[in-house]
Length: 250
Ligand SMILES: NC(=O)c1ccc[n+]([C@@H]2O[C@H](COP(=O)([O-])OP(=O)(O)OC[C@H]3O[C@@H](n4cnc5c(N)ncnc54)[C@H](OP(=O)(O)O)[C@@H]3O)[C@@H](O)[C@H]2O)c1
Image (cartoon, rainbow, N blue to C red; front, side, top):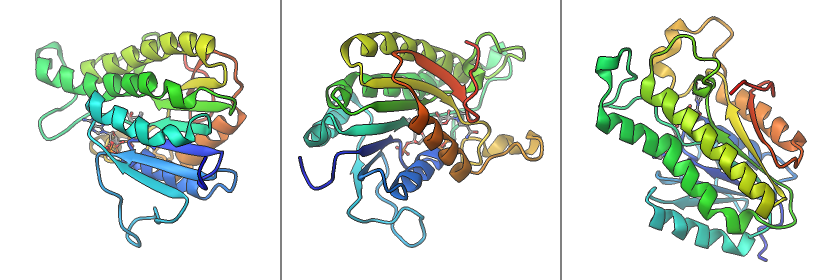
């Protein structure tokens, strides 16, 4: 065990709006001894970014192929059994070449693959690879960023075919993994989290239609999630909850 302590937080996809707010939140939490931030981007430099480098923050840059991700997990091995909080923040809704589908004719195989890769495949690989460092005696709560639009029961509007489907698939992956984690790592609790519409790059093009007061600051959502993580019970179940901690129907 190194000096970085015994109550670690891990943020995967740490450069995004929610990821960076979570890093900041955990850095300010005196109960968390160290924060590991994993991203495809380099560490933002102070003072323009609220993430300040210091002993408590370890920034790990990676690609998101399985071999590189396994290399990240190797670097985390000295802290195995000491992770209390994990947030998996990956997600893609649009890019220079991808726009959420409005109708059947917009469906495109390449875009579907790309959206599933970031929203479903990458979180699934993290949960596979991290098993050996999360298992242990420290109660560990893992929140993966899902979305309410991934709820099949709640879907009355249609559209956004690939994003909705990738989040529904993510929810099923998480439910499957919760069953296996409950059997093999009873100290781990999984949460599929809906942050609400949050002011990040992901929601930017759609913010005009958000009712007043319903667009959240990333720092607010990070605080809400930190509270949910702190109060979660190790019940061996997957919880699908929103930023208020309210359960969402599957
Ligand atoms: N903002 C909202 O209103 C909202 C609402 C519901 C759900 N969500 C969910 O919340 C999560 C965080 O979103 P955000 O709002 O913070 O968006 P964001 O600012 O656009 O952040 C995107 C995140 O996805 C990662 N990412 C981007 N492209 C990727 C790829 N090709 N492969 C793997 N990872 C990739 C980035 O990681 P790097 O650190 O490597 O850049 C970053 O963590 C997503 O899962 C999103 O679906 C957001």
